[in-house]
Length: 254
Ligand code: FPP
Image 1 (cartoon, rainbow, N blue to C red):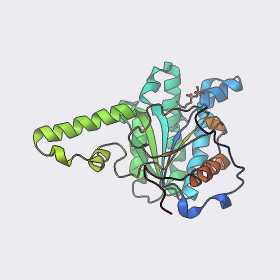
Image 2 (tube, protein in one colour; image 1 turned 90 degrees about the vertical axis):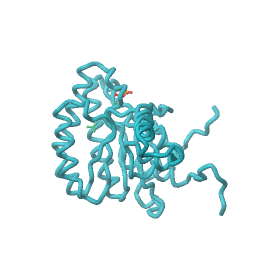
Image 3 (cartoon, rainbow, N blue to C red; image 1 turned 180 degrees about the vertical axis):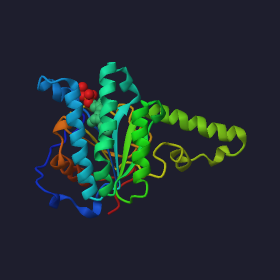
């Protein structure tokens, strides 16, 4: 095996987190809902429902820790390939989550934001999203960024098209296209790149998630299936992140 498997430390409480070195932006690939349900001989929909409950708890913890941004992969452009019923369940859960949780999210000062082609989502989900974003836009706490109908490659292609159009129309000089300009053309404009990516359920892949933005992100893959992931597991991932030596391609100078 070429990589050193991550040995999870026993983490009991928030005391082990260095509050002055928290990740500003945490991104999560919430994987394993289906397997969680299968292990219990339950329908996959129950796994997704349990997954929403985990999301609720993790948002609360991130808020408590004063993390700036939490981006979660809730529905990818590839997820349309799932059976129609499962897609329907995911969309219903999204609308339900926003309806039921909005009050608490608002009380916790959370700002709801989305990334992805949300115009292609069912109308009910779009309505709830618009309402949630409008209601929370003046909040100043955690930004909960929901990746919905999101794909990293198509995001990059769309950015290329948009910059090309500006260049062709003469409003942008090719020489002015740099990394900052490119980043500001993506859905994540205005947000720092993720410092920490967590993927649950042990899979070691990016699955078309934030391909540009993850360039220097620390990755922590945990064995827990998403519905089993909780506050302690999140804290353990943050502690693991804090032990990493981030060099951004340079060398350590102190
Ligand atoms: C992956 O599990 C999970 C998803 C495709 C969707 C994630 C969705 C949620 C956590 C709930 C809905 C979200 C919101 C915002 C309400 P999987 O089904 O691929 O699991 P498997 O790999 O074990 O089959």
